[in-house]
Length: 429
Image (cartoon, rainbow, N blue to C red; front, side):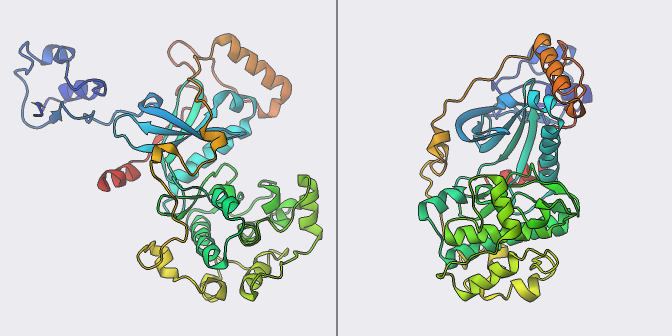
């Protein structure tokens, strides 16, 4: 039976809120000092505040720490770092934890800019086809994004198993990509810039979710060259000013990939691929239907002004296009699985097994956390960054015994908690 402490003293409430009850179900009343008497109850306790002692820590809103999450498996690895499947030690919920080393961001400021961009965008976006960010955390060594765990894995994983998708299956996922991109463009002013099958994940129900916003741009225009070669729009390659139309070219390239098993232009290196994008015509396989070919021709128009704009022309030219004749758009928007079930429902026997992720990653050993960065190591990193690229060097304070390279230095605005999503999680338990 729960034992309750009741009080109305603000100072006492503050003291209790600072206690960490995660490791024990008992409250050490001695820590309350003069506010509690020796009998463990205290003469100044009143009935305006309750702390259930036998439940997981609930007093106040203690900030989450990296150590609150137990690592289970590696889900992916790239130039940015690793993505780890982790479990919340308190709630038991599973998350995908994206890890990024601070040292790499000292050497190259752009790495931090991209990480902060991703955190900022995901903080603002609320859409079922965009990955949810629950926490942004840090320790002395790394930054962490605690993201929605998408148990279905990459769409690329399912595509590699099927080789190609039928138009009936592909149109469902193309529709969900369109809905996600339209939301990013029209409601948050974001150009995605990195649409590719690897960044399209499936949740447990089989719905598509966009991930990885490190290359995205919070702007209506840009001129930077970003993206993955096979899916980059011509105007981006040419270094021209471009807008969200570049994402619709990428959609055409991804749709082509889903229907044929490869993007429209391939080559031995990125330069050859981009040269082909600029100079060659798309060759459409004979087995594509006229409807699929018509949609692809409109999306893969090298002139962005003549390219199909799914933002402004959605109702007139997209929603009614015959390529989407297999779906009911409103059911897809509402994610009404009873009326419009996702065509691929991932097999998940145990979420902790990460069955829909590449065994190359899930079989990796999880490395233990690094020890705190020493002054000598940080000095070495600083000197290397100055000699390598003065313009990208991040000036930070050296760690002290108090800050240990955490919140009080360059990364002090990174940490974040998404209360809205956490409330939604609790409501659906």
